[in-house]
Length: 273
Image (cartoon, rainbow, N blue to C red):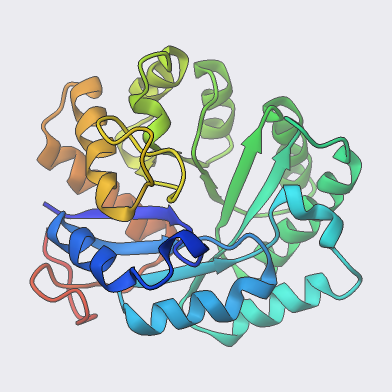
């Protein structure tokens, strides 16, 4: 079986000097491709260096909503130029809205819309972070699309209700589930996971955060995306091979990832599923 972890942060210090052992574990677990997210553009060179080591890694560039105050007059050009500078950039993000703790909602919205425009200009999908902001996120996306914008992407680490999930499915977005879906009290998220169509569901770790059961409480890593997949397969009453197949196909479709072989993840030639 093959899996794709569609959201990681391997450049964080907790993984320093451990990347080789991490890669051995993710490959042993069947992870054949990884999408590395970006919190702010200054991470770009670090993420590039990691992808240089592990050819199965593609990545994004963007500014996280909780870092919206770092947006300057030059940030849009910086993200645009970085995204064009490397063919391994497959998305803009992570970007979005986070109203859980922040009180700078207007600034977050400005930064979010600016990055949507970049994604549209480059014809790249977006990786959206949305916490306690689903209604406003829906409004902004509806307005952008109705004004001639054309963008698609993924609601990453999704924790919304079934009603909210349907909002973003109706807008054409993919829905990605992390280890949160495996938590005992995540009933609403689990109901959302049941309703997402096969051609719109993705899996991720969001490592080093949110390790799934049975690793909850430990540092998360890409190899653990298998536990998310196994839980979702049981929840959706399909076999794990089928879930692995369609989540992998969905990730390739959305991000336009380079194809890899099962036996040699560093050979970008053909995917066997």
